[in-house]
Image 1 (cartoon, one colour):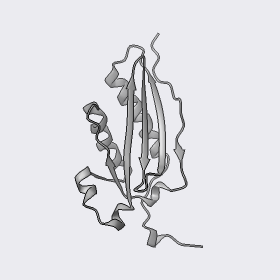
Image 2 (cartoon, rainbow, N blue to C red; image 1 turned 180 degrees about the horizontal axis):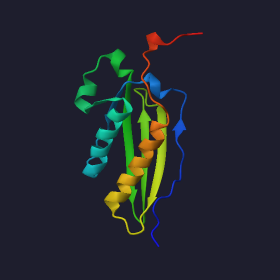
Image 3 (tube, rainbow, N blue to C red; image 1 turned 60 degrees about the vertical axis):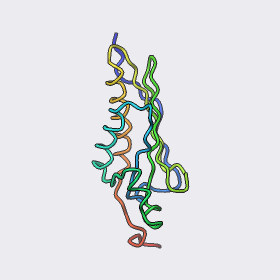
Image 4 (cartoon, helix red, strand yellow; image 1 turned 120 degrees about the vertical axis):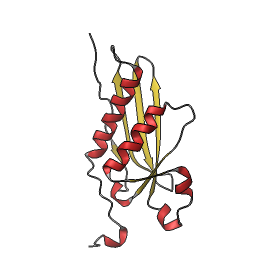
Length: 140
C-alpha cells in the first residue's frame, strides 16, 4: 500500500509578522539537492517576497537589511522525507517555522522532497503575506 503524505507539524509564527519583511535570501547548503533551492526560488516570489542572492543581501543598506528574512532549511531522507523551513530576521529571531513529512511508499525521494516543500509553501500561503512598510502602518 502506498502512503502518500503525512502532515506532522503545524506552522509556528513568532512575535514578528511576515508582513514586516520584504526580502528573502535562501541560505545555500553545499550538500543540498538542486531541486530544493530551485523550488524555493520559484515559490517565494509567487508569495510576493523579493528574492535576493546572498551577495545582493550583503549589499543592502542597514534599513533594508531590517526587511530581510533568511530562509534556512533542513531536508532529511530515510523511509520518510522530513523537511523544515525557518525564516529568520536580521537579529536571528525565528519569524516563521514549519515542518512537513512525506511518507515514501513507492514514490521517489525527489518526489517526496517536492511534496514536502509544496506543503510548506501551501501553509505559508495561508499567512496571506503582503509587505506593509512600517511608515504606512497606522498606530492606534
